Length: 601
Image (cartoon, rainbow, N blue to C red; front, side):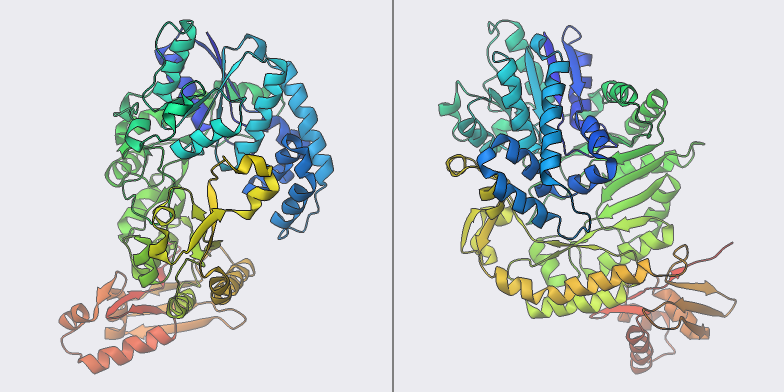
């Protein structure tokens, strides 16, 4: 039994596919009689078109799909071309659409001819959002040369509803894995290797063309029935094929290795999120098990940089992991997505263990909007997270979701006020709200003021009308208050752009834009402002003590109980003055000092 696993463009070029690594490692461990080969053809594409061009396209989900849409559906060429350039309008480089599609077409033919697909019993494609049309095009070309070869698709795009629609829309597909891939793929391989004498795993986790009529609806419980309950039993991901191809192409960069600490999301309540449709629940590895995997992969491949693919790190075991990593002598660096934490000690623990950059699910700087998003935090907690990242020396990235359905003028104004306060911290990115398939908003649109739902208009430029009658997209458009929201949030978009410009133009980005240094009975606060001289503030005596008491989120009542010699009016006047100077953030009766402690000692 021979199996090929493929990850198409536009995967991140300096990483092997974690999906292929996990599947390859699992089959290699549990089915040694099955010969598995993993293919990362995006490496050749990146070398051919240039890494800067590849990264530009890969950062824009629509642009990459446009290029392969022209090859798969030539009748859509002009509409795909227009969407391609519209998607990249923010970039000054002018890419040649026809030249790029020519390269992709020639690469596909050469790649298929050079690959030993004639001897493969099964070819599997792992598909994330920007890989769908590239994978479909590859399948059509493979079927052209090897018509009897069986094809299976899986990945985050292949949710149950979308999986059924893919089989209905494209008759050259044979199987779809709708949830976690390891066990369904193993069972499918055994079924095919036995010449189909071993029964087809008809439990909902695999869709087949033969049983399509019986699988019009697959419940999440069925599609996740083959999940691995204990992730600690999984073998490490197998990345040797990626590194072999890297060497054969003469590419000399050292990759960042993706690893999984967990699957699913331990919070899993955000109303806009559809990232966990393929999981039945949340599972994670133990800290010491993760440590062993990191050390094994680092030694095997000679790498020091890792990125966790988790939606959010497991709170307890990740802390034990980073505490242990802090005691190691190596210089391992990590990136991870985390939920906002307000305890500064957690960030210092992360930093000491090698977590140099994080993405925090900020999403909003309006408390009422955060409640509708069901984020479980308020603005104060988000600002505390941003401050703690700066103080610990961690680069903190995040998004602000703009144009969320039903947003109010008051929520926009609160966001603008909060942006003044977070000016010293690493800028967030703006992200327009999109309606993801299967998200709570998609399932309950009327609760968010959405009147009707339709295909996203970009799909009309990528797929023929006949295909769209059966294909369910990953992203939808909707009728509601979209035009109003776009106008309402434009000031926030402008302010984020100014925020980024401020940091780009700072003379010394190695020091915080707002920090304090501590003296015996005073402290000095240094504050940089846009297009203005740097300010210095000196706080003495009780003024200093009150400000330092606000290093963590604190209530007015708690401050009055601590500083009994100061009455309410005196305290409020002092705090209000600091708020006006953007040295302190206030939300109702809670306060947070914005300056971080910075010392060269």
